[in-house]
Image (cartoon, rainbow over all chains, first blue to last red; front, side, top):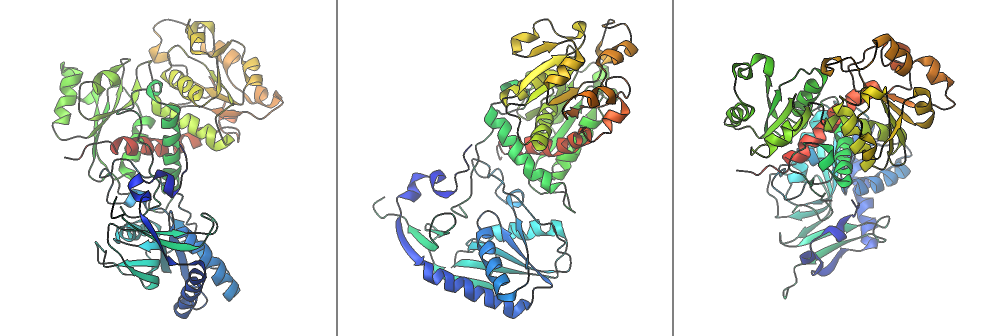
Length: 198
Length: 318
């Protein structure tokens, strides 16, 4: 089975959509920088804080934030990746199961401040699953949420982010994709709108 | 639709797991990939995920079993399924009820999946063709024991990085062993070379038609292989004497430290359990670092979780 990420596995209806860049590579960089300083404002030297990226795409945000934070602070920031596949609320409600990704949390989150990190906050269901999955690793003192893109007004659940890279107003029929230099070749966020003729 | 980048996997090509023979290589690799994730889950402080909280599973054991039953039950519970257990020794099977009647009675209590061990070859297949619930074969007589083969291959993959191209010898009572047959299918589908080794009387006559090598000398077999899977002598299935004495069997086909150390390479030693220490394998070999017997048991839970999870994904919602 191919490990195709993203496009090759997306039904053709999505490929027909129009593209609009909502965050170019320069603003992308600025936004990540701002998020780093916002995190430092609240978490100081991160001695009591752990960052957890949600698989599959939140881990890219985390990786970038981690390297920037560490170069600003000069210390290591404790980070982990969390896969929420087995905590999703749509098991048996979709035609094919989702491939699980790796969870790497080799530290205790009991009593820690946890910042959950994802690329796009949309319905809030992934975060709901993430909160459930997190409980398997202990009882954190506090959990915050960082989302690079917040698709506000699209929430199915009462969940909001504490740190937002950029808020965008979108229709639920639209798609937002965060692309990375390391994976897709360029840092940018793209909005796909259904083709009116399609 | 939550995210553009979720990777969807292909479903299993089968509706039930009655034998490895029916699986494709893609199925086996999908089970392994899923089991990798479950292995991480069962090493967490809280070893449980909520995926199957609306699924009920019946474990029907018409034949004695300790580890397989425990392993399945644990796998089911770690997926949050509701579990009911049934053993033939304490049931109405003794009173003359047929298999279909027994199972239909249980299914009318809204059971979604059946894990069954049965003394008759083909029992799982028979059942899967007649009931609506998913069926997982936990051993049907001398036919197949698919989850054992999956966990054996998963353990080889874990230790050696892959199964492809590896040489595996299965030693012992091949004639009565469902583990041997399932292992042969599974290893061959994954691209391994398989040899069987044992007394002539315990090697099925036409086994070479499955494409396996046959060897009657243990030392020669060990020198050939990367992995030795030592099977238990199943005295309970042997209606006649197949070899003069256990002591003689042990002298010719038992794996001891002396033979193991005299090989010019480090092979991996496996055993599906329960071990007869001093018969097919000596204590110092079973407890050596070349032995992955206990890892097999741990992997058994992860692999069974993967099988149950993937089959449950195909259960229709009402």
